[in-house]
Image (cartoon, rainbow, N blue to C red; front, side, top):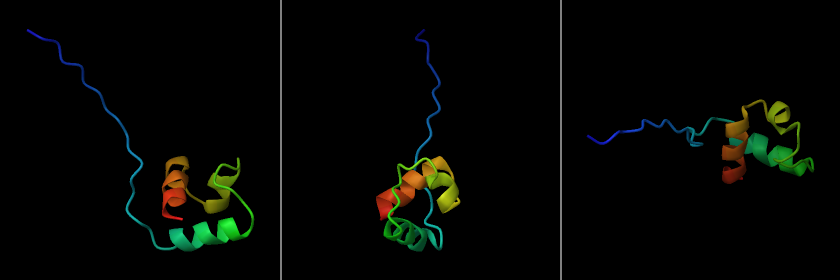
Length: 57
């Protein structure tokens, strides 16, 4: 009998939230980068969501 390893893996896809696109453009326009250490705080979202916004913009 073969052993089955269960593996849970997250993903970085989130439903588009109202205001993310505007926040992303404003963030870039201010000369900030999504890799900045304060990006999570400045955008007001979690780390994975920062990556998702980066993909949108």
